Image (cartoon, rainbow, N blue to C red; front, top):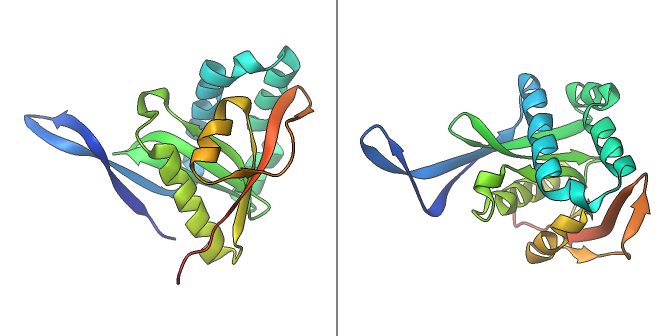
Length: 179
């Protein structure tokens, strides 16, 4: 599996007495990182998205990220999870189900607007094209994320929908890379 390393533009951090650019690596998440990824998803969901949902929607989301069946699917390789890291610290995550559908995408609030979400989309697009042999990805975008998905090339495929307390807009993006 490919690992991406990305140096964020204009971002520097102090390591000891040396200022270095922030280097973000994206790779498949390891088994032991599942809980960290779901905790990140929960934190960011509560910070930015929960306000858009009734209690039923918040409970549905929590049930989804704590579902033991989903975790078993991850362990069996049927549910893909990738993460972005600043050194060893997980700062973003994205997951795929059914080969082409983005199930979760969350970036730590301290890393918003630094290209991490776009990098995760790029990584998954490449993965879907090269590993799954597919030329598109889909997502059910939360209200908070609709504009982000539009900026990275997704188009609405239907109107805003509601299910189990969750509002979302179905979207699709073509992914075609030159091999």
